[in-house]
Length: 391
Image (cartoon, rainbow, N blue to C red):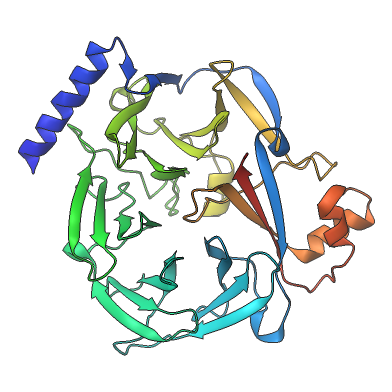
């Protein structure tokens, strides 16, 4: 495997050098992680379509909007406080449909169903048991057990995606594992390993997990971003961010400068893309400078020097940005989480009902979000916002 990695690294260097700093689909993007860039304000609606779904507030389906997967027809939610339950809602109407409660230690049960994938064609739900068994269990929409299989190499996936009709995609976070990023393509039928994708590097870089004050603290780094039918992969041990697709394989995409290997610790700057759209590539840097006197990990992380960057594909320029929702006129910056396995979606977010009611009473909403808020009670289920690639 080391020989394969070495050969792959040489091939990538030859591609980059031979194209004058270009990869197969265009120019490499160079990001100086120490530089201050011009400021830019963005609104989601300028580059994306926005969809709101009100989750039905049926008694057994009350939740905090912890969405784990969005398919064409369904939304799968895990309740933060009733952690054994998987709640299934209709994506088009928000109607509560099914509740799967299969927590336990039996052969047909899961311990902690954090990551999941839904196969729309076969109507099969793949659940990654995140606790200790490194097991993938398969259920139908009613929660009936169909089969299970162990992950290759006893891997525990923090990234778990629907690769295509026949295969799943799983990978580790790569930030703490000395072997670096490793991604598996595996069969949906029996979990057999079809392909391994590894990112070449010379020297391993891992995230610091213990800060000077002794707290468990980590900067925000996203190792994998879904961009339509491509995967954007960040391995901290290399200065190159790669894109991967079935058609083109692994290609250089973004290069950071200065090198992570040239920085001393503490004070190093970590970099990764966080969201991808056709017009804008959203990125983030985190500098490891902890605030003096912080009393909690949250205080430390809240004060880590971070920059939110965006590459404008039209201007071919990088900016520091603030992102807003045109349906909320109080200039609250948009919060987001990753797309959860749907190539149609850039990112999503769950609004607490009480917050939307508060905005509505203050006259701070408009459009579809205002219409929805007018019907809400403060104790209702959250409203899921899907920010999608423009059609």
